[in-house]
Amino acid sequence: MIAHEAATPAAEHGAAPTEAAFRAVYGAAPAGIWAAPGRVNLIGEHTDYNDGFVMPLALPHTTIAAVTPRTDGVLRLHSGNAEGGIVELRIDTLRPAPDGDRPAPDGRWAAYPAGVVWAMREAGLPVGGADLHVDSTVPTGAGLSSSAALEVVTALALNDLYALGLTPQRLARLTQRAENAFVGVPCGIMDQTAAACCTAGHALFLDTRDLRSRQVPFDVAAQGLRLLVVDTRVKHELGDGAYAERRAGCERGARALGVPALRDVPHAQLADALATLPDTPDMPDTRALVRHIVTENHRVEEVVAHLDAGDIRAIGPLLTAGHASLRDDFAISCAELDLAVDTALAAGAVGARMTGGGFGGSAIVLVDEAAADTVSAAVTAAFAAAGHAAPRIFTAVPGPGARRLA
Image (cartoon, rainbow, N blue to C red; front, top):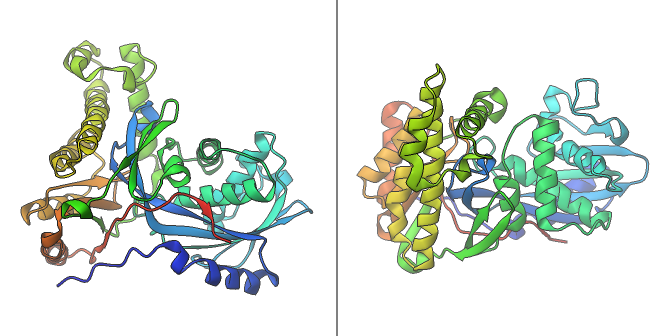
């Protein structure tokens, strides 16, 4: 039998150790402790920056921050997951430009919380300095949104400490701004909204154009199913340009079709839209990008309809179709992700697909509870036979969004 990694809620292994670590680093107790989750996206990939639909759920894996405000304009950052000591910056010199005060490469993780402070101050919010220590159980580079968890937990702590009164949706916008402008990753709004707004036991049906959302019950265990996450351990790096290229291609397609965003292309009119794109050297690839976004938005709506009808099993083929689209049209899969998906399906999974930005990271597998060990064993064996590092497999249980722990 394969022993699945436990998806332990953050409160069981977070607040007390993080408080103790803060004391060890800074010599005093923190003013508070906050948590924000990683996420897995059930369906709706790369649709968020096209004003489309997504459906993430929060993982029990979290980033936990112990934070105390400062009055001297100094921002001190420390991570229990990164080598090196305290990264110290001045908030009045934080800039996204090369001449600004940004963490050195050996403290690159610190650009995420530093960017949040910059984004809040740029928005005119009265945020001062802080001492911050973070610990995280969200795997980095696994497509599970460790960066958004770090950004959102920082923003929530500052929101509370400086009595800003910001809504979770506003926190999501500010943290997306931090990642786009300060860190330099042109991500959409899904990851930050998931970290800020998800609730336990639900998937979040989100319209990324206006952030209207609805919590949709997602209790797979009640239907004799399990949702596995297969971390391929292939690290992806969204800042390497490939993500930005896809986004630029989608924007190019929208301009050519005369719509504000690809979300505005009706699924029923997709064939006509593709036929109207002009013949230019880049249009074959652009057509494929357009096809993925339009069909993926439609798949999200179909998944929501099945979940509203109480039929989780019916979403399996839609997950699998989404992977084929990401692999063939969006071209962001990799050998390890394809192997995980293909092997899981051959071993009896109900559906499977890659999740996250692509080029590595994780796949999700919807499987009958009774077949979970068999499918996990098959994927692990296939990775070993192919000479890949052993995958990390755990069960995804929809957890709560960002919250204060202490």
